[in-house]
Structure formats: C-alpha cells, structure tokens
Length: 323
Image (tube, rainbow, N blue to C red; front, side, top):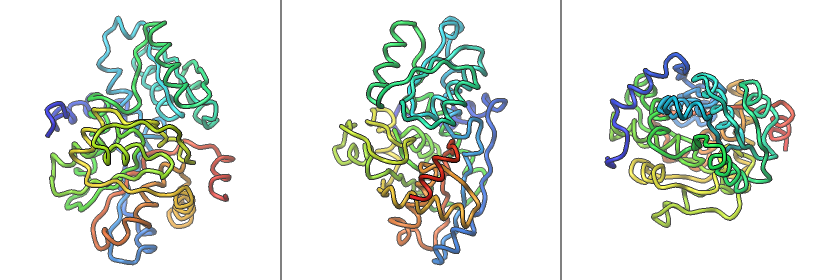
C-alpha cells in the first residue's frame, strides 16, 4: 500500500464522523440487469445517487471541510465543478457553518445550479473546465478561501473510501466492483478500501472515450492532461489526472475500460426500462461497461456496480435518453 494511502481505520473513523450528515446508501440486487446479461452474473448496485446532494461527492467534500480550522472556515471555501462537486461543497459548507463560492461551467445542468443556490452558495460561471479551474484558483488567492478539490488528496480518499467499506460490509464474496472514473477520486478511494479488506476483489474503472485522462495516464505511467473533453457524461469530464488519485488507481485498480456516448445512452435507457432508474450519463457508465466491454470477462461472477449519482433535470434527461 502506498505510504500516504488512507488506512482502513482512518476511513472508518471518517465515515463515523460524518454519520450525521451522510447516509449509508443501499446495496441491492439488480435482477433486471442479470436478465439482460443472461450469463450467470450476479449484479448488485450501490445506490450512491440516494446520497445527500444526489451523489457520492458529499462524502469527500464533508471529509475535507471537517479538517479545516475555525480560522479557515471563517474565510469560506471555493470549488470548481461541472455541477455535482459544486453542489456537494455547497452542502458541506452549510453543514459546517461556512460559505461557499463555487465555479461552474456555463453548460452546467440547471438542476445542479439550482441545488447550489438552495444550499446558499454563490456561483461564478466559466466558459469551460480549464477556465473554471483557473477562476477557482483566483478566488482562493484573492479571498483566502480554501479550494476543495473535486478528486485529489487523502481527505477525498477517506470520504470516498467509505463507499468501498460499506460495500464490503453489505455483501460478502465479491468478485469485482465497477466504478465510473472522472478524476479518480471515487475509484481511488473505493479501491484503496476494498483491496485492504480483500486483495482478491478486482476493481475496474470506466471512462467515456472522450474523457479518458486516467486511461492515458496509466499508459504513460504518469498523470496527463487532456487538450479537450467531449462526452455527454459531464460529471466524468476531468481534464487531467493528478498524482495522489492516480497513484491509488495505479496501485489498486486492475484495469480501466472505455465506453462510447452511445453506450452510455443505451445504458440509461436500459436502466429505466428494466430497473425504473432515471439517471445521468455518468451514473450509467458502470452499467454500460458491464453490458459491453466487461460482459465476457465478468460472466458468472458476483459484481457490484457503483451508481455514483444522478443530478439531472427532465429536459436534459429526455434529450440524452432519446438521442
């Protein structure tokens, strides 16, 4: 285990410390997906879209803010996000009695913008994800706010590691856990926890073809930056990998597969038709991988899909669903 990777005891302590602000999300058998595969695979879903703020992001944001000093909290926090991390940071800021000024891309889903405002955050809009990161850094430097990173660092990994801890508490004898990958904060945290509990569990990442920073980083053996990001799964559109989360992924994740936007759309349709779940594209990524590039290699195994979150408004859902 990398020296800086959070120990399982620290992950459990963080999970317990956040218990009043975080819910233990259900893990359920997905018989509808099993019938589609028809190959003996047992499929379970970790329903993180039922988490506070609608995604797993609340775990990492709260884990980070709980470590800040009173002096830092008095100055407030900032964050950069296509939406979900911004919502989570706004929620976490309210939970610890501080204020958030978040930077979102102009194309952010309206439901996420409304959620940020409902939690009391100020919003600054940027033209694209690169400009958003620059704007958040400027706010940090100008106002002294703490920049809550969307996916990097041990605090995030302790928060997201609780998802892996809960999965192993809720289900025994798991063969594989399949997780969507944006910047790597979720899969890095889950993989670090799961592999400490049972080194035999395979943790597999899923990236959109148009946002494959982690796949490219693994191929290069170092974090890389994308020039452009093109995917309907905006929650997975991190423009680069970073050292800490990349290190966890490189050490604990067995492989990362790619899915197309059309495969994401089809997974959204199938989740609605067979599971009655209306989810955003990022949340459908694990399903798209299981029904596509992972179907043969995971046949007959016990598999957990992490349904990472779903903050989407009806017009956007209908557009993505029907395209």
